[in-house]
Length: 285
Image 1 (cartoon, rainbow, N blue to C red):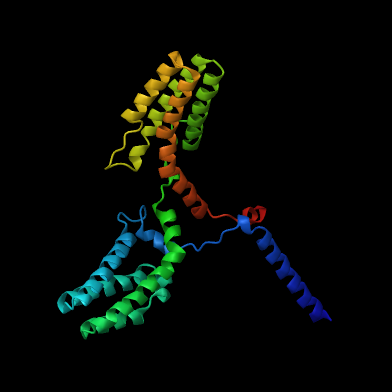
Image 2: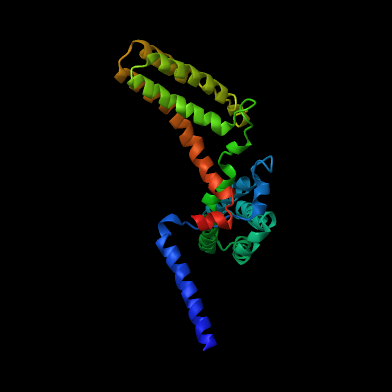
């Protein structure tokens, strides 16, 4: 009787857990995160994007092996096959946790085909190697790019003695909205004051861009944005509410939306995967 009750309780627990997952399936997404050892091959832990270069090498080498097998060019085929084998096996050296995912038998077959001029067998072996690569890419490529290649604004120091980067961005949004509110409610002086504060805040923000754009310098706000600000200022003085709304909308797209599309969306996604949630947070959700 005791065992019957125990088994019944286990089934009930499983049913409850399954029910929770089912009814919250629209709020739950499971992803596989890569091993922590992968971080050492990406910036900022490494000066170069070593992992990416190894992947690029593999893609180039697979293409070359296929090309020279089709052309029956034994000399060049042997050279590129040696490189392909080296960089494929390097995956296990760089990330030991992925050693078991490598199909070393397939690489050995490719080497044998190349050494013995069995050109007709190479294409099929390459297809198998490509499937082996894609199986990992399906699990990890998107999440890895998000974690290690998306911008990280948490590293930006505070703006000024008392203002954080996040608070500064919040102030810029409030200033844009204040211009819209004041313009629609017939308070041009308030709108102009907010525009002046917005311009000053954007100039301050622009100084933080050099942290990432050291070589390819990006001026923010640039000439086009400054020209739009001047047009908006003139419109707030002499234009109609419709004109002011159009100029403000143009500025919001140029100065806010474009940068957010490039930086904010991937940065927010990165934060989801790098900021680990504890059990209390997960249960709350």
